[in-house]
Length: 374
Image 1 (cartoon, rainbow, N blue to C red):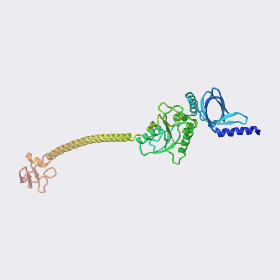
Image 2 (image 1 turned 135 degrees about the vertical axis):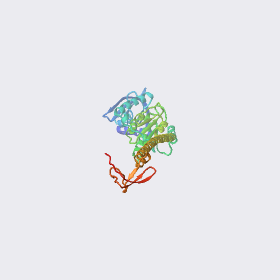
Image 3 (image 1 turned 180 degrees about the vertical axis):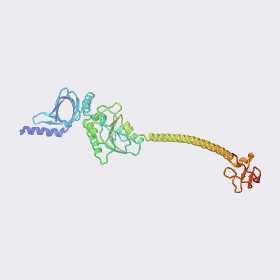
């Protein structure tokens, strides 16, 4: 039976339909070579191993991590035969694999973002002192998530925790995490802080947190973000761009909320210190008051004693000036009939009757002779 020949374009279309049906997506691992970017939009590179080479194409907007020749990568791609008869992979995602490639990709992207100022301390914000509404981005099945929640509840219960469940490793993880951050930022009542957490793992496991769009999403978040990823020795680009970086998920919980027991102890210590200061102040005031009262009483006593002395002195003077005091010394008071004391103003007359008062007697006498002294 003779087959009807196909047109070239129909043959290409048939091959692509077959590829799309049999292999809609392939996961391929190899080494990057001939990497280049055309017109700032289109990325071309070859993926090769010891015996074969595949042409790869993608847009620069799909490139989530820096690439260079010699890197070992894993690509998610759709195989396709172009109209020019060239077989290629249309890449949907690419991730460095292997410690050397991951490290080099990390260094390239870090230098790029650092130059843009994304890691600058002055652009980072402080976390709220006591957040009551916390957004968490993590896998709810991860041990790091359980540690975070347990420590959070142990330190301060009754908090509102909103969880966005995402993958925390693998090719799909960065996109899911970015969507979760965007979701929290777009909420009518967004959380006061977002915690991005996962436990430790290998460099491949933590590669999602070195994803460029993810790092930029953290930097552009209106809500402050704390990142607690991996162990103490792990540092991702997400850690560098976060407002606060915690060494572990447990440490993230510790940095987010204070320990209620510590607060209670601190308050009790403050109250005791305040009472002690008040007691010392009251004692000091009492001592000062006693001193002031003592000084005042001594002044009053001295003033009283002085006044008593003055009264005694004046009384003695008055007694000395009392005319009757002279009677005790043998003198007499002589008055005329009008009761006037005979002296410079009242002169006696011959025949006049005078009254004489001595210390012991009242005497009446008649004047028989008056002689005026010179």
